[in-house]
Image 1 (cartoon, one colour):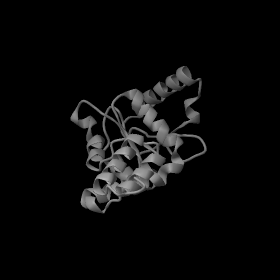
Image 2 (tube, one colour; image 1 turned 180 degrees about the horizontal axis):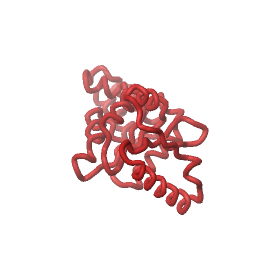
Image 3 (spheres, rainbow, N blue to C red; image 1 turned 90 degrees about the vertical axis):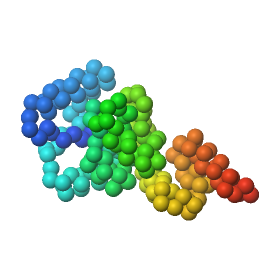
Image 4 (cartoon, rainbow, N blue to C red; image 1 turned 60 degrees about the vertical axis):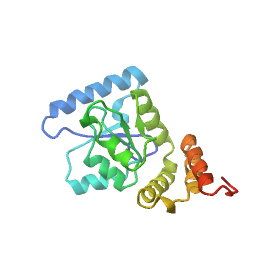
Length: 189
């Protein structure tokens, strides 16, 4: 999805066969028409295959990256992470469907890992509709990176406040509890 007044889904055309892209366009057309009575062309953009630097620039303006359900990303996920863009992924049953999940878990970012297709859609919608919160997500990512390197330096209370603002209440409560364990006299926690 890219930044805009309305959401757009951006897809990269199949690099070998235009027929693959056409079949996908037809599937999108049916899904948008049958489910929502919408024209998919009003919400979907297809871009040609790009050089890596052009792709990186294109990726940088996205609000949310939606990991493919059938085949988990690698480079696209890394591009999103480099730009602090939330990545929504689906817990796959095979290794090639778990790359993004593994990357996010290593960074302690599990709130965008969906266990079902329904949850995947819910997370994606929540992330896109809260695009103004992108900077809060960036702050959480920064806190988590520091937690991996030097856990004692992270103010768990402040991380809890940010998570609470994002509506991640279970994680916020866990941060407040950790803050109290570390400092039972903490007035605000």
